[in-house]
Every structure is written in C-alpha cells, then in structure tokens.
Length: 158
Image 1 (cartoon, rainbow, N blue to C red):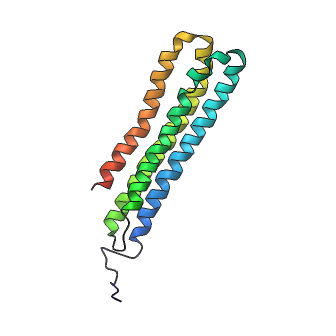
Image 2: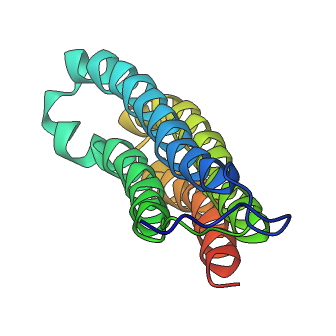
C-alpha cells in the first residue's frame, strides 16, 4: 500500500472544505426555499378564505421558492462529485466559496420570495391588476439566487 504524504499544496484537510461547500450549498439554499415556501403559503391560506378560485394563480411564489433549492442541489452534487483523495487547498477553498455563493444567495432569494409572495398574493387577490407586477418582482427576487448559481459554477470550473 502506497501512502502519499501531505504537502503544503495538498494537505489532508483540503477535501473538508469541498465537503463544507457542498453542505453549505444545499443547507442554505433549502433553508431559503423552505422559508419562502412557508411564508408564501401563509399568504395563500389567508387569501384562499375569501378567494378560493385564485389558489392556482397564487402558487407561483411557492414554485419559485422551490427552484432555489434546485440551484443548491446542482452545486452540491457537482462539488461532491469532484471529491478525490488528493485535493489541493486551492481547489478546496474555491469549492467552499462556490457552495457559500449559491447557498447564501439562495437563502436571501428565498427570504425575498417569501416576503414578496405573501404580500403579493394578498394584494393581487384584492386588486387583480397587481398580478403581473407581483410576478415581475418575484422574478427579480428569483434572479438573486441565479446570480449565486452563476458565480458558483464559475468558481467550480476554475
């Protein structure tokens, strides 16, 4: 059995940072998605009492919050797939940064989607002309998570 001694460039703990990047990606993005789903669902439930016919239109923020978790899942799978026994510290730090980029931006996007979704669903039930504006605002909140995904992919490919 041949064992390779750790070097300054490939310390034993380097893979730990990649694992933490994968964990950060999935944990933070799903936290944001869960919060966004819960917060928007509160608005849907309150709105559905007086306007049950609008429930299917009101599901949009819940779907958008769920997409945020997919961003984190994609990066977590990419990072976990890149693990091997010989890992450089540079690559480990890049992968940690990639996981944090998509995770934290996903959490922020999920919180924004939840807050906008709750208020927007209630407002568009009272004034139907607000629906398009609420969707546009939700898209701007969703794209925050997409920015994190783009940065994470860029860091992963370095």
